[in-house]
Length: 464
Image: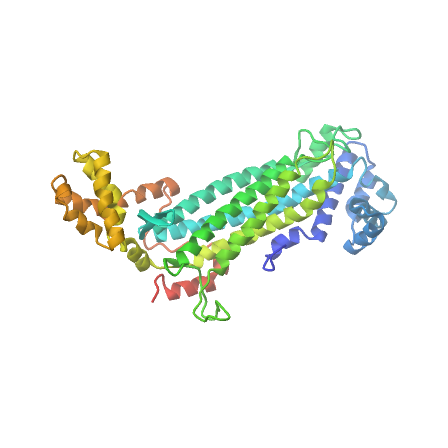
């Protein structure tokens, strides 16, 4: 299902009107190329170029009778063109038009998605620099591990989006192909040279070889790439959902003054946008499985893929367009609570520095096995009795007799743990570091979100 908040650009691309207009563009390009080759009268090509048109309603009327969409289309156009229409669709089979036009529709959709990817990357980069030095606890298995920064987490998401941008560009390019090779792909009526010229006219490449259809491994790769992107967005949304949990409270999706979280519990502030992103990402991943199933067709073609593609291609591109926009807004407007991050980081009273203390004992002559036993014994006691791990360590003569107190204190030093954040950012962002005092860049989409962004700015980054 297409979300009710679909932006109009993507909806227009997959409309019947645009689909048939794109078919018409393919037909006209073919006719004009054939006229240049002397296979179609030039006056017929000119008449078709100048007169060819249709009404969507008329196409549907004819299709209800003939039960064939391309025949309904060519008939509706022929009614308007007149006698020269006998040269319309000359030498072509239905999928010469349908598959080639579909490549053009996907190209249009891909242009929007490519912009969406860049906008999300910009938002992630900006907020990563904003919180580059904001310490928080890193978690593995959901359990406190070692310190990180919130900006580091955002930088990781940004880096993944850069990989998505690269793989999406490759998938979009791989599917930018057309075909005019006829009913079984053997060029019984046209030639490979003619095909190449028609495709070039349309801004496409000619597939090296096809059956009656362009081979569906290309489409499977494309939809699978959309599924990978959806999984990244799901990953981001899931993390924010976890960080918004009452027991964590480190970040939270934007909640307006008039927003309601529950019909029964007025106190609720639920991560509904993040949950919607996670839910719809599952739909895109499910569509990828359908795309894989479409690869295996009977002989030179059957139409088992056709009905499925009428659903999964519009829906998947529309959903990704929607989810990228929604995720950009989620990141751009989310509340971040550094004080709560710091409190959670310190809540285990030094336990998160056990790894460094282990290494320091080893460096001072203790075997790794003994060092692990010593540190773990204090760590388990601190967990069980809610004691201060730092103080337990300082009271242990087996440790203090081996490691100088200054070295022990340094083991519990937070900046020491985070000393390589700048180097990580340099790896991720290169020399594009944000300068202090420099105004944040505004993309067109960010500008459209100005009202919500202003609300976030006014409320601040911290919970009152």
